[in-house]
Length: 440
Image 1 (cartoon, one colour):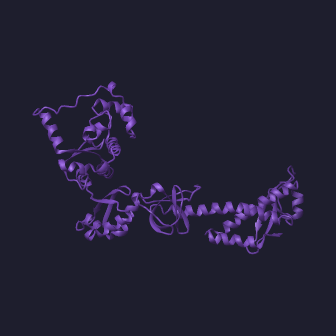
Image 2 (cartoon, helix red, strand yellow):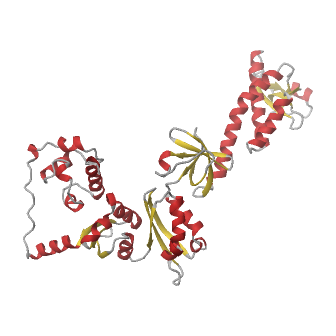
Image 3 (cartoon, one colour):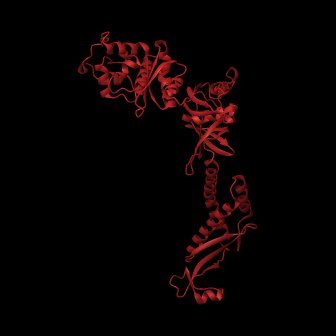
């Protein structure tokens, strides 16, 4: 019989309380550590076997046993005991039983305590990680108030219910500036059982944060009268929220905006002045798409092939820039919200196309193409770094009369869309890059 030092035994119980871990799990970890220490100690004495340890939960005293299987004929002395010898120790022993034989632990106390401390740290860590995983796995999508604890190079460490959580820099809003001890709202997005960093990952850019903020701020959403059908964000800049009312007497947009904008303004302040477009949802795809382009007003919506989900939206000339939005943001968010690929055209362009198709006017003369061989693609590629722009597309742009950044300065998205291989996202990235190049 041996006793683990009182201070160590007390620390086991204290750790269990502080970490919120089941005390029995901690003692089981200590017993495993003691068994390993016994195995190492007795092996050094040329005694090999299968050792088990048991600790008294009240006193801290522990016993070590060598487990031996009762057999008719002993082949491995360290692991087996004959039936005759076993019955001398226990008359009820039978072949196939396992006897627990007490071992002398008088020299084992100090060694056991040291080994137990080393293993205990790891076991407590594993148990704590499992507890965190179990606790937070069911809280994914929940908005919580977290306290800022410290700052790291790529993340901000927060505390939620005594558990550390990680807010990566790219999951924070562009305007977020925090102080230590500040309390902020975040949404729990994941929890990892095996992560070396804090297991709980949170975000302020996830659309679920915006949805929960609306649920908290708008009673009609909280009680289910108004339903959020979809939500998309370019966090810190702009968001679109599609809402629908189950009660014909309740205006879903008005409910979300609130009196003089009080409800939505509270959310905007929380999200560092992120602009929020509240869109009325409709089962009519064309109407929903028109609503999604708010604040632009659509003249008509021409639905294309449902399989490709392409749609053409025609707007007044003065509404074209509003419909597209700065850097294409408005039409891009509308496309994400509705699930349709939206091509925005001006009324003038559509009228000209119709006139050309009817033979009433000659098509506008295109700029004389510049021979590809006279304008190397590298002229554009060396000037602008745009994701998706390669040598082939640069050659096509040059052939269409856009050999360099200067030639793209006044180009419209519609003109660039006529170049083979250009898609809407690449067009907007290219226009952004040209504006940045000239310092806009």
